[in-house]
Length: 109
Length: 111
Image 1: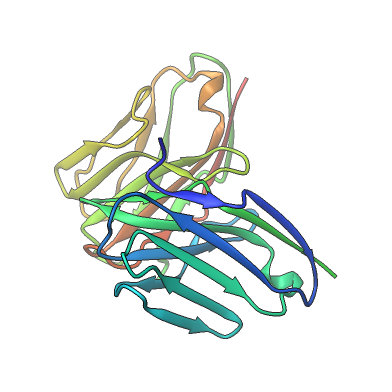
Image 2: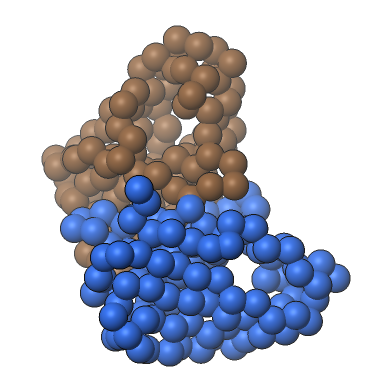
């Protein structure tokens, strides 16, 4: 059983559409991170959320940490082709950063 | 700052060969990690280190070895390459629970 379950696994949408991807767990975490990975590159940190119910915005991206700190969502408004990539959520588990399997997002122009 | 560097970028190995994937960081980070990523998947932790001289196993350590003789370097060794080790390998570093910085990856194929 994965510590972090991400859904959907794959999402293909048209430019301009909105979307939400999810990261769920049965465990409680002190913080949660979202990374984006573009093809051929390593993951890059987008945001860290630390407080239950916290909402953070990064331009057209909105991140929310669940009230119980067990889950998180990433909402993208008016998606653009440049948003294409693999979106990964991750949590620190002791000294280790554990990743979900990711959501592959493809935005078509 | 170069950040996290990895060499080589690409490598093809025959079954049973050995090789070392190099990783170096110039940010004076104590924590370093090795991950593997299979196509379209997330990252699985192979080994990690919390400081020079200290290493520990991650989720998928079998078939790999690491050493951490300096703060800067964290090489990953494959002793007897197998087709199941075909993957993209990422090295990362962090300063205690903050942002992980990833290298550009090494794409390894074992035939």
